[in-house]
Length: 142
Ligand SMILES: [Zn+2]
Image (cartoon, rainbow, N blue to C red; front, top):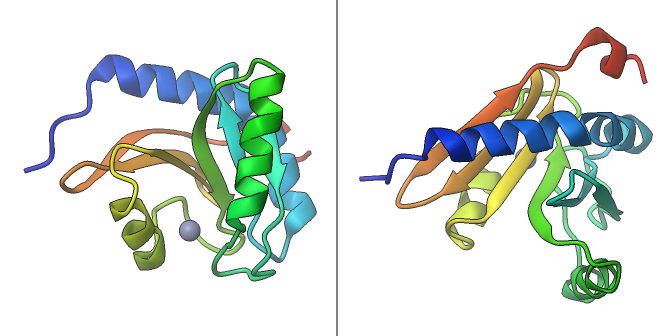
């Protein structure tokens, strides 16, 4: 059985998503029709990565690029807390591919920018929702 996600954790994740929303939506729009992918830091800032799969249905980032990003963020004193990606043509729920990826990183926060909003997920003996925020019109229009 999955362990219940604490309400406080959901509140923190939702605050993070609200802070990151303008950057997440801008990156989603810039990457369209491909999926955008990147890192969200604990201060709500984002670090865009390159989707090397160049696909609207999946993302891929080499280990080298991920390590490089982590080094740069740590030099800036930033703490990576989640990987985000966009679903250009679908909602913010994880795909089967996303779920199998999360199963390999239990406890890691995954943020999905979908057409219906931004949602956070993690795998902990089962798929767990860690909050969701709607996209305000103002942000949607970026
Ligand atoms: Zn996905």
